[in-house]
Length: 304
Image 1: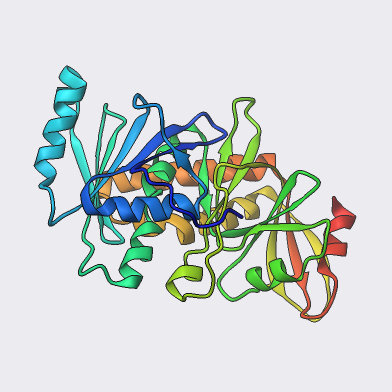
Image 2 (image 1 turned 60 degrees about the vertical axis):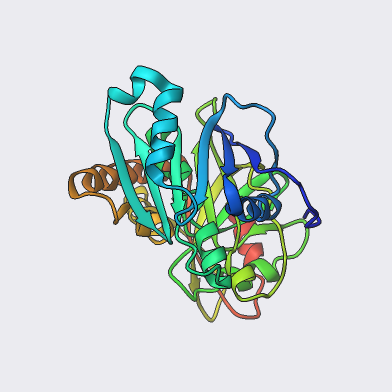
């Protein structure tokens, strides 16, 4: 966890295990938000201006057309080879292009209210998640715990105890996050998983924890968490696992792609389900029945 110091920059680099390399930049007053986002996610100031850019600004400060024109000037004839698409979610209007990799992000801050600020930040990476689908990635509503360099997901519907389970596991188990993850295929076509922030820690003012979202661990197993009177682990077939993974993706990211146009939305639905099926075939999935006071992690160890 990194101390929340001042980075004094408006552009930050994000590198992921699948080769994604982008810069996140704030223009104008929103630079304060992008700096806070970088502190929470443990990003460093960017020194490579040639990376794909996620550019943010407040809607009442600069007109979006000016930035589209700037991208047009930057990319030349590429800007004429496809269309711009717009998706509005979590007070952010994302403008992305068929050919140009840069994404324009116009934020309606609505008076800079506390919940709007962190609610918007929770959507800053939606475009990254969207682009990861093309290479087999998938965002999930899940907790991530690590043991000896290997990652294990705890997924399930709300209030099944993911956060409580993360607090209960003893060393050498190490909880990395308890709300969301991004699963990606690395350059060797192996699944790895990046932790994402629990934004309710900030909206509810519970802590100022940080998450190193650039760090990834090998994904070794998925556990579908269920509350029970006794601790037990039961294997799940790949067909059922694919359905569970698809549902988890909808919980994590569905608010974004459901705002897309109908034809594009159906393509995304199909791609999410395909990636869920591929993940279910490659990584073992289990039902984890966990009691309130038992030692469920010992049952996990038995199957690992």
